[in-house]
Image (cartoon, rainbow, N blue to C red; front, side):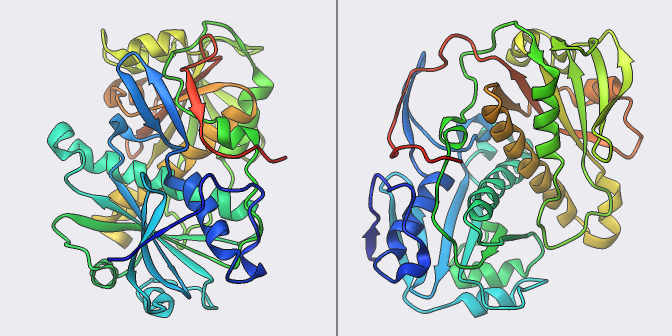
Length: 385
């Protein structure tokens, strides 16, 4: 299949997509690089690795990104920063018809996020399916962030004819499946700010220092914004905080009220380390972190209307929220680490969750130790956002 190289490193601000066909590859290339590209080189104790703009459970990165525009259907190749042309035909209308709630007007672009089923199942077993759904959600959240900032009014779709979309993409359903679709209008310039370029997992750990409560509340406020999805959740995700070193906040567990911005006390004498199995890496990270933000959800509420598909839909939503927490933390100068190795039973007990709710994801926050993991950033200069 033809491979179409994209300009690298992308220019920021990118040319607007409506400035003609000459500007379109640069705009699309900037979007894809910040979505799932290779954006830096990291030096860690394990060696040199390629860094991406979003985290992935276990660093497996099972997701793939496909893009459909008037110029055709393509598969994004992160390592080469290039597009693999699957079809020169304009398939946007065909793809939109497979959506449960298609946009009223033909979208300028359609992003399809898939997951390779064998990417992490050998390592994690059945738990890998949940990690794949969370990874898809994080990537969907990144797409929404980029397209919203460019004024493209994006919508994320989790309800669609999966087999039909797979057929249009030419996927083997036993190996790769569509998990999410993002439709958008014509984007303006892609102008990433320092927080988006700086966001990364706090691999070097946290300094055991307090963080301002105002910074925590700013993170929670951003995470609680409505998610532009194609369906209304029968029961939305809740945010909880287990505080350890937060200025002006007693140690303990709190539930965040998005209507008032208040942190409602649940229980005391608990720390983030209590959320993880004893002796594991999560316990050490929890000991160092200033606090943990937990995303909880209701599996039972969605089964009557969505069936087994609700499992993926709920974890996708949690992944979107996790992406927002990580980016909002970067805006406040905090390090963040998304973790899925939570002791679910222990966390639910700590949070005093209702019987129908459970913990989906934990994000540890705090000042990153030292200057963080050494890295060489590969993208262009930062914009004002």
